[in-house]
Image 1: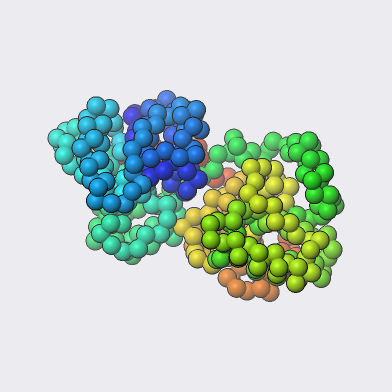
Image 2: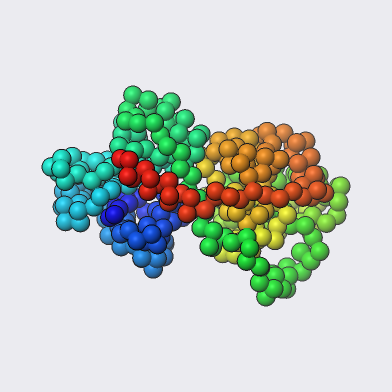
Length: 363
């Protein structure tokens, strides 16, 4: 089978990561994987894992982008792809128009995948008109039905993005060299229970709630330590400084580290006692939570959006109501005192690829 995926950019967005993962699985299973995008930081990894990448500016939301329809139609004609899989509105529109210009007997199957929550409007409605439509969670599928019920050609199928369990392998031990190097850099972590907060330092991700929780936990026990991991997005420098000031005001100068972005998340998930996901806006899906759970790390998250169904499957005791500080403290204390195993079956990209291939065959 020859599959062409289309995504605005091959970056660390939900769409970019899902494209990378499915491309890898398609190649592993003996299919041909082609990706069209404007490029990005994941392009080299995509090609290294066996996919072919063709660069086109599919990220510019402009009428000028309509000039790409003819080259895309020519590309589909030359490649004779079996399936076109669009993961965002602009690529979906351009490829839908390109496909409609082909003879019916030469048209590939047209699939759309929803990785985030789209508001109403003609531009976003294209995500509902695929011959098969997938959504990254039941929450995202329901939102799609609410917004575009008249446009939907079929019932959206829930296909979680999954995680590369060869990269996030909970059975592989953490390197002693990594652990010792981290303790050399941060000796204050020795003998502590690490509480992990991976999120960009920007409003809406629950950093203040995490710091207040850490302060409350510190009154109960002196062995907890907070690790805040994430970049400071453009325009959020003041917010990040205010967070550091809040940590000082709460007396957490020796109980929390702002570590910035890290490339060793697998090891941090494996070594942390709890990972926190305290987003204010209900997410369609939460890859960070999936990665942590895949590594066997308990996750505490607000009961909202796609992360609700994820934790109900893997670690239901980690669900708390948004804004309920008492429940957040109670859940944290109970997990630290009486840790319970995390269920991580069904989270791998292998499961995702099987469902996607079955869907391709039905389109």
